[in-house]
Length: 318
Length: 279
Image (cartoon, rainbow over all chains, first blue to last red; front, side, top):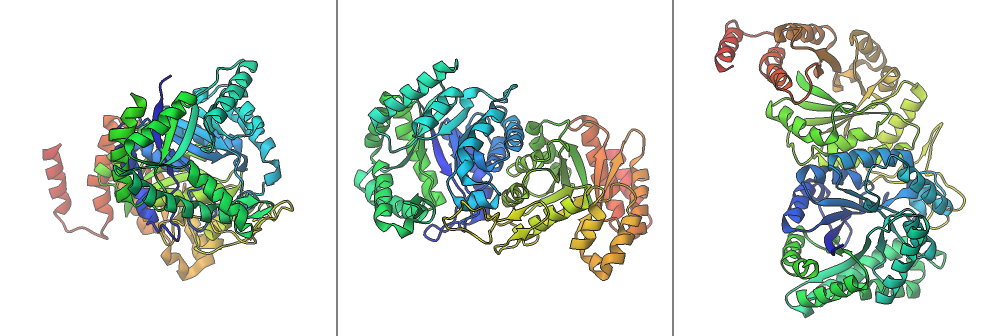
């Protein structure tokens, strides 16, 4: 299996620090997906969260359906559909419909979700999300299966999550904070669980926050402060740190922000390609370059996609 | 009068929908209505979304129905699809149980307003206020993104449609005779009915009925109970030459004859003569 490279992460957000026109984000998305396809990327990924002021997309399968009609080979994925927040039978039917619209190009990533407010609005207890994940996977995994098993993706870092990925023969989206040794350990756990369950292990993927500039210092000085600001708001408002939301634990929030920023990759095309190649050497076969953030303008995004495709994509996948 | 055509998602693969919608747009008709089977109501909006990049002008209708799951999914997906379509979405919600259709309508209307809301209904409480949820507990929620349109269109179908439509000042879709439906609506709403479209679903088989006869049928309903938007369920299989021909008949023969109260003598003859030459 060769290394594949895709791009993400479409969230359709308009935040205070990165104001966007929502109608334009949505209207332009199918054409942008066609551009991503033309540039040679293997896949494009859309995220899910709900009920937040910045309009984070709560229904990623619908932009994917629109992109499917504008593309022919690009695979279109969710990273992640928050499975425990969904009615699994409904999700199975909707995903099958979108997969039909995409002629089999849907990559369905499923994750747990973490915000109390999202679960509560839907009348679902967050504390039962693990059980709901298992129940949901059983529904999605039921025969007849709607798609290749390795087109189902699961996220997580805990041993139980990795074993679940293996047990269902799913592909994995590993956390970007894992180093080479952590990746090898995760792959081993997934592979063993898959074989124990009599399944073939799926692909091993990782989403990396990433920015390329011919001048590496420019890449770092532009991208890294913005990534920190991005995660400060997200982690501060959403992440539960020590039992409360992040802004109430500033010292823990600082650590989380720094952790996220440290794992971001910014530099020249050669520098970035070398870091991604190292991931591939550790066992990652599916790399998603996260270059789309609320703070990235459409113009900058298109330039970044072009530069990434003409440099890093070729180097990593050749 | 606006004229659209229906596409039955029980028989048409979703991958075919964008091209069919583009054909309707090419014929310059007003609306494409994507009707989901009742056992898979969730696929209507997915089908509508596939039309976002491939059409620019027609209204895109998505016919779905009340189901056992949570109505917030539909509210969210409605807003996302309306954003993708630049405000061209018309949602049709079918329900035979008045209490259930009423609750879903209530949630959709509340969710589409640009302010947080709470809902306490017979089947759903939003937010639920479950005891384990202690981090940033909410008493009201805001469904985002908002729909593109200020007042996104919602039409109701099914046995409970008229009663619920009258309660919320929405349009019921007439699937049979519309005269009794609108008699009830006018009784309940009076002059407020003027702000409502009067849509109907009608069958047409071009093999069995001339386009001019269909025109006469629709004219009678227009002048009788106020039909102003017709969704035509065509007998020919979508995508066939017969189907494309029917689209052309609807655009060139039926619709122009429904726009005026009367036409000057000689105009219809001119249209007929020209059409005979071009076809």
